[in-house]
Image (tube, rainbow, N blue to C red; front, side):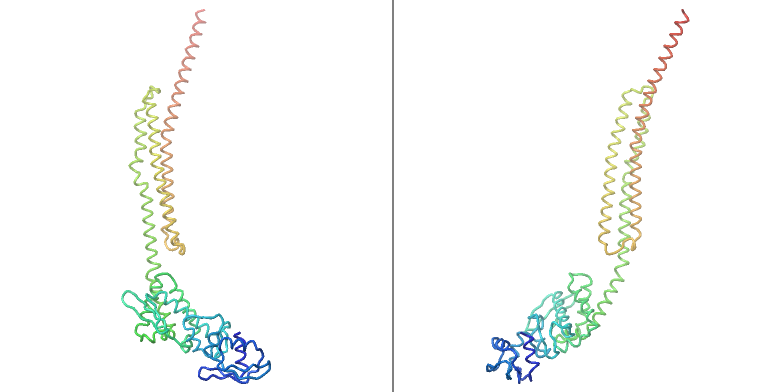
Length: 394
C-alpha cells in the first residue's frame, strides 16, 4: 500500500502543517486505499464516501503514516529509525526515494548503523538513556563515553569516498580480540578523548578519514616493528632448536653405538678357530645376535624420535600456513637436510650392526664346510694310497 499512499501525495496539492499532511484536490482512483487509511486511523478527518473520479481533500496524520513507512523528511526518518530499521520498505518524501532504490542517504545511514553496532561490540558497557544509545569503551589506562546521537545533517557529512574506510574499521571491530582490533580501539579512544562527550560521535562521522589514517598508520608501524623481523627471528630460533634435537639423536647414541665394534673385537678374539665346534664359538655367535637385537631395539627408538621430531616440524609449519616459511627463513631447509642425514646414518649403523654377526656366522659355516672337505680329501688320499700299496704287494 505504500506506493499507493505516495501516489496520493504526489498527485494532489500536498502540504504539511503541525503534524498533519493535507492532500487537497485528490482525485479518487481507488476506494481500497481510502478504506485502508481509514482502517489504520490515518485520517484526521473522515472523508465522505466518494466514487472513483471524485475530487476530495484529505487530512492525514504523519505519525500514522510513519508507522507504515512514509516519512516526510530525512530527519523524521532518523528519529524513528535511529539504530535499526523496523520495516522492509520506506519512502522519504524529501529525497523522493524508496529504501529499495539506490541512494547515498540510505547507503550512509546503513554505514552508521553498522558502525554503531561494531563499536557496541568492543565496548565494555552499553545502555540506553532517553532513547539514545551510549557506550563506554575501556583500555588499560583510560576510557571514553560515546553518545550515539546524530541527525540527518551528520549523515551528509560522511564522504562517499570514505565508505571503504568505514567498512574496514567495522570489520576490525567485529573481529574477536585481535592485535589489530586493540590497536584500532586505542586510536579511537585517543582520537575522541579531547572532544566533548555529546559531540564525539558527530565529530567521528565528520573526521572518519583522519581516524582511519591514524589507525592504519599505527597498524603498519606495528607490523614493521613486529611481523617480519620478529617472525624471522622466531623461525630461525625454532629451526636451530629442531636441528639440535635432531643431532642429539645420534650424539646421545654414541656411547651405545661404540659397543658394536667392541663386541665384534671381543667375539673375534675369543673365537677358537682350531675347534670350530667348541661351545664358546656357538655361544659367541648367539650372544652376538642377541646383542644385535638389543641394539636394534635402541635404534628403532631413535628412529621413532626422529619421526616424532619431523611431525612436530610439520605441525609447527602449518601454524604459518599464511606465510611461506622457506621465503622468510632458509634455516628450515637445512633442518630437513639434517634430518635426512641422521636417518641415513642410522641406516648405516643398522647395516654394520647386522653385517658383523652375519659375516662371522658365514665365516664359521664356511670354515666348518672347509674342514669337512679337507677331511674328506685326506681320507680319499689315504684310501688311494692303501689301494696302491695293495697292488704293489701283489
